[in-house]
Image (cartoon, rainbow over all chains, first blue to last red; front, side, top):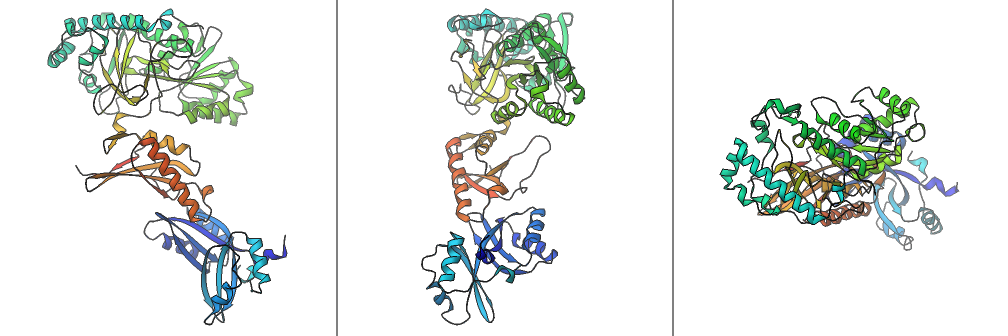
Amino acid sequence: MSENDKYRIKQLSIFSENRPNRLGAVAKVLKEGKINILGFSIAEGAGYGVIRVLVDKPEIAKDLLIKDGFVVKFTEVLAIQMQDTPGGLFDLTDQMKDINIEYGYGYRNPPYAVLIVRVEDIEQGIRSLLAGGLKLLDNVTFH
Amino acid sequence: MSYWNPVEVMPVPELKALQLKQLKMLVYKLYTFSPFYRQKMKEAGVTPEDIQELDDVRKLPFMTKKDLRDGYPDKLFLASPREVVRYHASSGTTGKPTIVGYTQNDIEAWSESVARGLVSAGVGTDDVLQVCYTYGLFSGGLGLHYGAEKVGAAVVPASTGNTERQIDLVRDLNVTVIAATPSYLLHMGEVAERMGVDICKDTKLRLGILGAEPWSERMRDRIYERLGIKAIDIYGTSELSGPLWCECSEQNGIHVWGDITLVEVLDPKTGEPAQPGEKGELVVTMLLKEALPIVRYRTGDITTVNEEVCACGRTHPRIGRIQGRVDDMIIVRGINVFPSQVEHSLMQHPEVGNEFQIVVDRKGALDTLLVKVELRPEAFGDRLFELDAIKDRLTHKLRDSLNVGVNVEIVEPGSLPRFEGKAKRVVDKRVY
């Protein structure tokens, strides 16, 4: 256990083929399980996609989705806090030059905004982000 | 090398000469005595004089399942009822069953064929062979029984059903060889485990003579790994007598006894002989059958033929594992595609499951081929490029093995249709 482990956030990654209303099916399972969605993105591939979701109760959500026939994996991501003002993202990227980001998505959560990223080496990523003076959100903020 | 009959190692030229002699006699006999064959040959403009070399067999008309069905019950029989000593009947899933009659000589040639196969697979007088094929109108049980008895093995005619008793018999009678469908053998393995019987340790089983349903090399490996049983592929169908030929201990093709049978493997599209190793339809002429003669019978089974002398020394031609049915074949841009080829390719990719669907369509003048496969949950890991890589690998693999352009679609597990009995894997959307 590293003290940095608290910055590792469990994201649900859901495999979805290109069929009408697969997103609706995911949303329905989450609704029925009274799971709240905190962040969300869809990545499109060749005939299929990956739905990535941050939720308040990831373990329960995963079980419910698998029971409904979905292919679901946990992926560890980081949540970086940024200023909700013009230039907020720029200030952050300036500190992230050396980190290899696989993908990211953002959301606004006044008074600040949040950038979710998957980085190639998460331990290394946490250390350099903290060293750069950035604020990472603790996973208790989510779960 | 031990063989049952010296004819098994007869030099190829002599074997071919013998086949030609027998073919000539057969055609002469049928033309003279069989109203059915005489009529067919007249329609095809062939007389016995036209058969001068072995390849002339191709001048003779084909025979199909329909001919046998139309001939119900015994219109095609050449032997008189008093010469017939046995009847078997096919299941007749599509209507009337087909009735096959046997003279004493037919039973003898059939048993001889099975006996040679069993000996080539390593079965002998020291063996105890349990037959788990049905005894009755189905020819599997009695076919194996007569062959095994002929070579002097002790036969346990267990037939089908009551799996726990079957396992008790295997253990208590020191059964060494089991003849069954591969799926039943695996089922026995599972039941044995529940009974606390370890097939490897608690029984003497070493050899399985498996057939009567399509199976694969992977199943062969699985049977060996789980049960320690060397699996031998056996082929036959009731129209030809019943189970007839099997692999030798080399497990490299099914020996077809040329002095009893003449096989052709034909390209289903052109009717021309398939090149050695190329797939085609198995067409069979039984050279000695008396009660129900069979000439150029289209089995509908897809296989390959290999005329090279086997490592075991036997000179007779070998056919490969049955790879599907002609009825399942699809022609895409002029190329024959068999669902079994797709299945075989997919098996080598653990990222996807065994269920698949082939969708054929036409865009403009061009046929398109789409293969849908289900992703295995273990292979999924959030990254899109990993999914794309799986898709690319599958696409290349299928292109290489099918020789035709193909698109692959990766779908969610459980989303493709499942089938209780015979799987229907091809959806042909082309409008002709």
